[in-house]
Image (cartoon, rainbow, N blue to C red; front, side, top):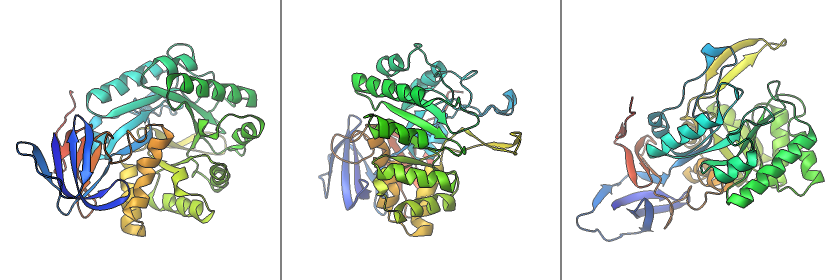
Length: 376
């Protein structure tokens, strides 16, 4: 058991100064002036902030890239980098390369991260269609493989398979039913590129079928103004849109556009695209530049919104914890501080530096120093 005393608690709602009891990897109690229990370790969190751990729904945990040849493949993520970024839960997925990268390796990496204390899930599929899988069936992957909660696909991108409307409709239906059968989120994470059709095929399916809008989870919607406007329309219909943390000011401008157009912030999530590659091409499709995204960008974005743009901690936090947990159908197990939720917690100092990371009741970082190390 662990006691956290005198923390300024955001659940992510601002609850003022509270104490938190942790037992068996869960939140046991939250309240003012909870009694001290002799013999139980406690953390004096005076003048510090306690929040839920961050959830990143889009991490290339086995590495992304490869678009400039084998030497441009990005390495796999390490648990220590995730911890330093305040991430206690991640969802791993494949990118452009579903050939030399595999869903098998993805699931194995998720299991490795779980052994290191991080809650890890993943998506079957990749950019291309038909989707790469473990069982030769998207539905069977979701139903029978514990870590897999949905499928990944690329749309409106020169690297995608340019699926037909019927193929997209069938895949969404398969993912939806598999989620129902396995009591999982059953979501289709849609990488969106810069091609002019954007989200139109998804809108057409919503007009023609009864597939729930929550099945479709578009990401990278802030990559261009036209796509962002389409995404705003999608959110107004009840969907959730995911913004990639590419730069502090760029994300802020996208968020302000979303709010100005009347979309509730509860319809928005942030993700890092961590360990995935970003790339630039010329008009002929030749690769000009390639790099790797970091996994600490959600944390950095929250700090930027609060310190540079005067957002409340509560409004910034929900983008990286509660909203994401609801999309993944992990709420209230994840994304919140309340009784019976997982004890995934971050302790911040007054300058919003990360002081401590607790995952499922275990302290992984203390005083800014990692307590868990890589095996190799």
